[in-house]
Length: 213
Ligand code: SAH
Image (cartoon, rainbow, N blue to C red):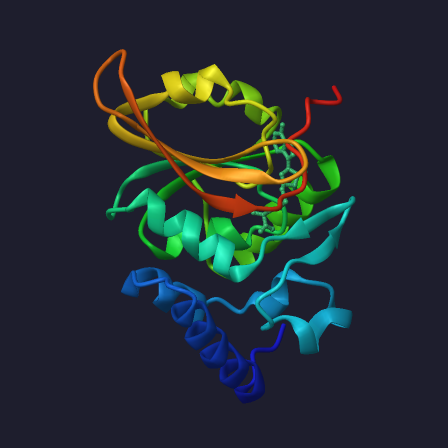
């Protein structure tokens, strides 16, 4: 597990790229600049890890593009201590970004292989989510709700109602919605029964799948 000057140099360039695409939140950019993304990927991708691209992480899944991670994180407007639910732990990279911003993170993954790997790996880097959950993100995490923010890192064919109902008043759900490509959608809970909805551009995610178990 090495983080060399070469990696740090490439990471600095990545931060510039992400900023040039419109990310303004300083804390989000600092997190991208700090987290050794190459360690979340297979060593074979070492020289590609700081390109602004998604890459395979096994189990037919991908580590999200850094710009996308930054875009979704910025929309959550995280304050220190916020309770955040993440659907789709994957490599754990987005999880690390959330923790770097001071969030208390509950993260759900449905694929055993990725779940175990992230659970072993993240604490080694000093990133400790409040809980790793092996399960189905469509259900959210009712026992730990309500949340200040919920982020889905897989494309949902529809908006799961439990996720909306597990938001605090004022809480935010950031979720890519659609089948082939997805519209980044932000819901803000404005009262017990009301939500504001914002559609924020087109993205491409791996699909959010129903649990296999
Ligand atoms: N944030 C991750 C993204 C991984 S891709 C990263 O940057 O590495 C999306 C992840 O969502 C995959 O790991 C996939 O297995 C997971 N996923 C898909 N459907 C899910 C569901 N219903 N519940 C929980 N996780 C799910």
